[in-house]
Amino acid sequence: MRITSKGQVTIPVAIRKKAGLRPNTEVRFTMSRGVVILKKATTSRDHSHRLVEAMRGRATTGMSTDQIMALTRR
Picture 1 (tube, one colour):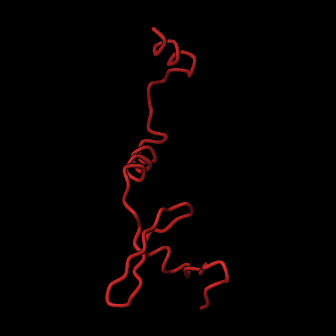
Picture 2: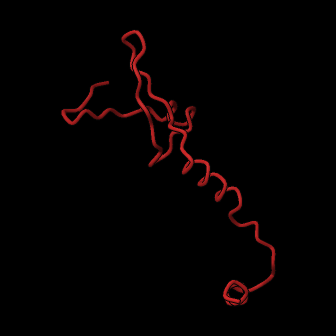
């Protein structure tokens, strides 16, 4: 594997899957004893995104969007 002239490298699919690295995942680089370490960054945005994804599709109010919007505008 080679680094491109722009400093880019492709992370193999198996490693991305195992590490949970999806498109647009923030990562962080550190060095320890001459070894470069790539870690998935943990930010509050990551936590919020996971929370929203976990809740997606779970609403069971039986109300239409217009009815919900009317409630929020009162």
